Amino acid sequence: MTTTVKITSIGNSAGIILPKEILEKLRVSKGDTLTVVETPDGIGLTPFDEKVARQMEVAERVMRENRNMLRKLAQ
Image (tube, rainbow, N blue to C red; front, side):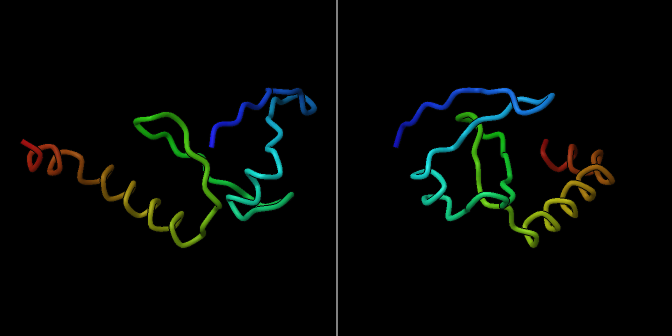
């Protein structure tokens, strides 16, 4: 599915209006929270998942605390 959306002003911020079809495909509705993920192909939107968010926080902390060891393992 390819859809174009327009950036619009929302107060002092900017936002996009997602068409009904996209909301249905994501299984979200007005007021729900989405996760924005940078991928090699661009930006992805997924419904927010508290469990995944906690796992990502732990993974980021481990990577930050063990940066040097992970760098050596990657070599």
